[in-house]
Length: 450
Image (cartoon, rainbow, N blue to C red; front, top):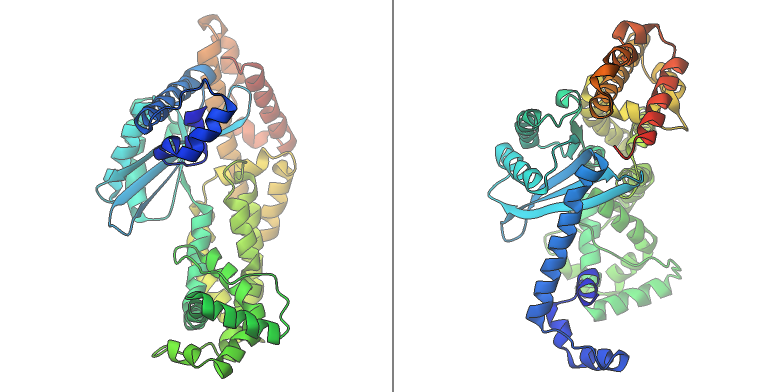
């Protein structure tokens, strides 16, 4: 438990040698001998090995099929890192999340990423992979191709990896919004610089509070900075700063240091604040969608397509706005980037549609309605056919896999009868397909111990 305490609360190993900590433990239980920092470090590492050994048993015990998420970045020391996370359903049908790997890599090249993921999967004994979610860097296309070749040799892919490459929806949103930020960048920079001035010393912050009090600003929000790589933090920064516009304007009149702080940069003007308000008003939906899609402890694939259509409707509406030129231009830029990733149905992983089909709130009827409402007749027909073909392929794959595990050769005849053909699926109505999937899910649930 001492090792768990150090890990859970992210304590340094030296905490166990602290005088106050030892006195506290001695009062709780005088007979307990507190370990040294070296011993507790070994205990933490042993705990890691024990948990790793337990996790390795999951694939054997639960026939688990893992969904992976990975990302790479470079630190300020120019050191490249990669993190690999897995989500899977355990034998009790609960969603589990585990970080498998956090390590250095030589570069961000696709083959380097693929080899590192391959090494990690072999180390953990994970062979059955359903999807790998990555951002839209071109190097990830190479990494996915490399992993497909390796996993195909292990017979660990679903439908030969046809649906393995999942593009991160939150990252696509980030790219879409960043295009809009380009036009507003001067306004954002000026407001950011003003916040930097206020937060650079306690004395300046105190002057700012006095200015806010003089302007009778009652906002409970506090000024915060944004992170360049996360647009939603820029949204939060502007949302918190807008109520204090009059306080910043008072500083401009009363504080000489505020004026000289900007030097070559300009101070926020009334136009900058108007642009910021338009930005916050327009991107509030994108902020909420990003939060919805970024959940890691619950399933999100079933809401992706619905959110995509909501964003599309908003962009169409605002791009036709002739009253506010700022919002109109912003929406047009975002719509171009939207069409690049989500404008064509072939660019979207079909599993996003299947997630809606398997959601009891939506099912196939809702998908049918959305397709007819948002696409032309020809496109809607192709999309519905694509969804039906995907259902056919997934159903047959899992049916065959289940029979490989649970049926003997004497049952081969009945197995052949259970496989659905493309022609049969085409003749089936949406209700019959839904019932077939319900039967499959009941079968899997009944054989969860296999």
